Image (cartoon, rainbow, N blue to C red):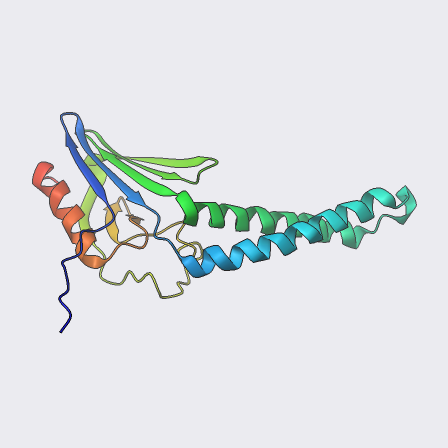
Length: 184
Protein backbone atom coordinates (compact mmCIF):
# COMPACT_ATOMS: atom_id res chain seq x y z
CA UNK A 1 0.00 0.00 0.00
CA UNK A 2 1.40 3.40 -0.99
CA UNK A 3 1.70 5.95 1.77
CA UNK A 4 0.35 9.38 0.79
CA UNK A 5 2.00 12.42 2.32
CA UNK A 6 -0.18 15.45 3.14
CA UNK A 7 -0.07 18.16 0.48
CA UNK A 8 1.91 21.30 1.30
CA UNK A 9 0.23 23.55 -1.24
CA UNK A 10 1.70 26.03 -3.69
CA UNK A 11 1.18 29.26 -1.79
CA UNK A 12 3.59 31.17 0.38
CA UNK A 13 1.92 33.16 3.15
CA UNK A 14 3.90 35.75 5.07
CA UNK A 15 2.44 37.36 8.17
CA UNK A 16 4.26 40.70 8.22
CA UNK A 17 3.89 43.63 10.67
CA UNK A 18 2.20 45.72 7.95
CA UNK A 19 -0.14 42.90 6.86
CA UNK A 20 -0.36 39.58 5.09
CA UNK A 21 1.30 38.78 1.77
CA UNK A 22 0.17 35.71 -0.17
CA UNK A 23 2.13 34.56 -3.23
CA UNK A 24 0.35 32.06 -5.48
CA UNK A 25 2.45 30.71 -8.38
CA UNK A 26 0.48 29.85 -11.50
CA UNK A 27 -0.54 26.21 -11.69
CA UNK A 28 1.52 24.66 -14.45
CA UNK A 29 -0.70 23.33 -17.21
CA UNK A 30 1.94 21.22 -18.98
CA UNK A 31 -0.36 20.28 -21.85
CA UNK A 32 -0.97 23.98 -22.53
CA UNK A 33 2.74 24.81 -22.25
CA UNK A 34 3.81 22.06 -24.68
CA UNK A 35 0.93 22.58 -27.11
CA UNK A 36 1.37 26.36 -27.15
CA UNK A 37 5.13 26.02 -27.69
CA UNK A 38 4.50 24.15 -30.95
CA UNK A 39 1.51 26.31 -31.88
CA UNK A 40 3.54 29.51 -31.43
CA UNK A 41 6.17 28.25 -33.89
CA UNK A 42 3.43 27.80 -36.52
CA UNK A 43 1.91 31.13 -35.54
CA UNK A 44 5.29 32.85 -36.05
CA UNK A 45 5.67 31.32 -39.52
CA UNK A 46 2.16 32.52 -40.46
CA UNK A 47 2.86 36.00 -39.06
CA UNK A 48 6.15 36.38 -40.98
CA UNK A 49 4.59 35.02 -44.19
CA UNK A 50 1.65 37.43 -44.03
CA UNK A 51 3.92 40.41 -43.30
CA UNK A 52 6.20 39.46 -46.21
CA UNK A 53 3.17 39.18 -48.47
CA UNK A 54 1.98 42.64 -47.44
CA UNK A 55 5.42 44.26 -47.78
CA UNK A 56 6.17 42.52 -51.09
CA UNK A 57 2.92 43.48 -52.78
CA UNK A 58 2.45 46.84 -54.41
CA UNK A 59 0.14 49.32 -52.71
CA UNK A 60 -2.63 48.57 -55.15
CA UNK A 61 -2.35 44.84 -54.53
CA UNK A 62 -2.73 44.98 -50.74
CA UNK A 63 -5.68 42.85 -49.88
CA UNK A 64 -8.10 44.18 -47.28
CA UNK A 65 -8.73 40.58 -46.28
CA UNK A 66 -5.02 40.02 -45.60
CA UNK A 67 -4.78 43.18 -43.46
CA UNK A 68 -7.82 42.17 -41.38
CA UNK A 69 -6.60 38.57 -41.14
CA UNK A 70 -3.15 39.73 -40.00
CA UNK A 71 -4.67 41.97 -37.30
CA UNK A 72 -6.72 39.06 -35.92
CA UNK A 73 -3.81 36.65 -36.23
CA UNK A 74 -1.54 39.06 -34.33
CA UNK A 75 -4.10 39.59 -31.55
CA UNK A 76 -4.53 35.82 -31.18
CA UNK A 77 -0.78 35.36 -31.05
CA UNK A 78 -0.35 38.01 -28.36
CA UNK A 79 -2.99 36.24 -26.25
CA UNK A 80 -1.28 32.88 -26.80
CA UNK A 81 2.11 34.30 -25.78
CA UNK A 82 0.61 35.79 -22.60
CA UNK A 83 -1.11 32.50 -21.69
CA UNK A 84 2.10 30.59 -22.37
CA UNK A 85 4.25 32.98 -20.30
CA UNK A 86 1.74 33.04 -17.43
CA UNK A 87 1.67 29.24 -17.29
CA UNK A 88 5.47 29.10 -17.27
CA UNK A 89 6.22 31.76 -14.65
CA UNK A 90 3.15 33.81 -13.72
CA UNK A 91 1.95 34.41 -10.19
CA UNK A 92 -0.65 36.17 -8.10
CA UNK A 93 0.36 38.36 -5.18
CA UNK A 94 -2.28 39.32 -2.63
CA UNK A 95 -1.43 41.90 0.04
CA UNK A 96 -3.81 42.74 2.85
CA UNK A 97 -3.27 45.49 5.39
CA UNK A 98 -5.80 47.18 7.65
CA UNK A 99 -7.05 49.39 4.80
CA UNK A 100 -6.99 47.49 1.51
CA UNK A 101 -6.66 44.14 -0.22
CA UNK A 102 -4.40 44.46 -3.25
CA UNK A 103 -4.46 41.71 -5.88
CA UNK A 104 -1.66 41.69 -8.45
CA UNK A 105 -1.49 39.19 -11.28
CA UNK A 106 2.05 39.09 -12.72
CA UNK A 107 2.11 38.07 -16.39
CA UNK A 108 5.93 38.14 -16.68
CA UNK A 109 5.88 41.02 -19.21
CA UNK A 110 3.33 43.14 -17.35
CA UNK A 111 1.12 43.09 -14.30
CA UNK A 112 -2.54 43.77 -13.63
CA UNK A 113 -3.33 45.20 -10.22
CA UNK A 114 -6.63 45.77 -8.39
CA UNK A 115 -7.19 47.32 -4.98
CA UNK A 116 -10.24 46.78 -2.78
CA UNK A 117 -11.08 48.70 0.39
CA UNK A 118 -11.33 46.34 3.37
CA UNK A 119 -14.42 48.16 4.66
CA UNK A 120 -16.41 47.03 1.59
CA UNK A 121 -15.26 43.39 1.52
CA UNK A 122 -17.87 40.92 2.76
CA UNK A 123 -18.19 37.12 2.85
CA UNK A 124 -14.57 36.14 2.29
CA UNK A 125 -14.78 32.42 1.51
CA UNK A 126 -13.28 29.45 -0.28
CA UNK A 127 -15.20 28.62 -3.43
CA UNK A 128 -16.35 25.03 -3.63
CA UNK A 129 -17.06 25.11 -7.36
CA UNK A 130 -13.52 25.96 -8.50
CA UNK A 131 -11.95 23.25 -10.64
CA UNK A 132 -8.61 23.40 -12.39
CA UNK A 133 -9.74 20.75 -14.89
CA UNK A 134 -13.16 22.09 -15.82
CA UNK A 135 -13.45 24.33 -18.85
CA UNK A 136 -15.19 27.39 -17.54
CA UNK A 137 -17.57 29.61 -19.42
CA UNK A 138 -15.91 32.60 -17.77
CA UNK A 139 -13.27 32.84 -20.49
CA UNK A 140 -9.75 33.31 -19.11
CA UNK A 141 -10.17 30.90 -16.17
CA UNK A 142 -9.34 27.88 -18.31
CA UNK A 143 -6.04 29.49 -19.24
CA UNK A 144 -5.28 30.13 -15.55
CA UNK A 145 -5.26 33.88 -16.05
CA UNK A 146 -8.36 34.85 -14.05
CA UNK A 147 -10.83 33.59 -11.49
CA UNK A 148 -9.87 31.71 -8.40
CA UNK A 149 -10.79 29.57 -5.44
CA UNK A 150 -11.00 32.44 -2.94
CA UNK A 151 -14.03 34.70 -3.32
CA UNK A 152 -15.41 37.77 -1.65
CA UNK A 153 -18.29 40.13 -2.21
CA UNK A 154 -17.39 43.74 -2.91
CA UNK A 155 -20.46 45.89 -3.17
CA UNK A 156 -22.82 44.10 -5.52
CA UNK A 157 -20.20 42.01 -7.30
CA UNK A 158 -18.13 38.95 -6.49
CA UNK A 159 -14.35 38.94 -6.98
CA UNK A 160 -11.89 36.05 -6.95
CA UNK A 161 -8.22 35.23 -6.62
CA UNK A 162 -6.18 32.05 -6.35
CA UNK A 163 -6.62 30.56 -9.82
CA UNK A 164 -6.20 26.80 -9.84
CA UNK A 165 -5.98 26.38 -6.07
CA UNK A 166 -7.40 23.28 -4.44
CA UNK A 167 -10.35 23.91 -2.14
CA UNK A 168 -8.34 22.87 0.94
CA UNK A 169 -5.59 25.37 0.16
CA UNK A 170 -8.17 28.09 -0.47
CA UNK A 171 -9.72 27.33 2.94
CA UNK A 172 -6.29 27.62 4.57
CA UNK A 173 -5.78 31.05 2.97
CA UNK A 174 -9.20 32.24 4.13
CA UNK A 175 -8.58 30.99 7.69
CA UNK A 176 -5.18 32.74 7.78
CA UNK A 177 -6.68 36.04 6.61
CA UNK A 178 -9.66 35.84 9.00
CA UNK A 179 -7.38 35.05 11.93
CA UNK A 180 -5.70 38.45 11.49
CA UNK A 181 -8.61 40.47 10.06
CA UNK A 182 -11.68 39.31 11.93
CA UNK A 183 -13.99 41.76 10.12
CA UNK A 184 -13.61 39.76 6.93
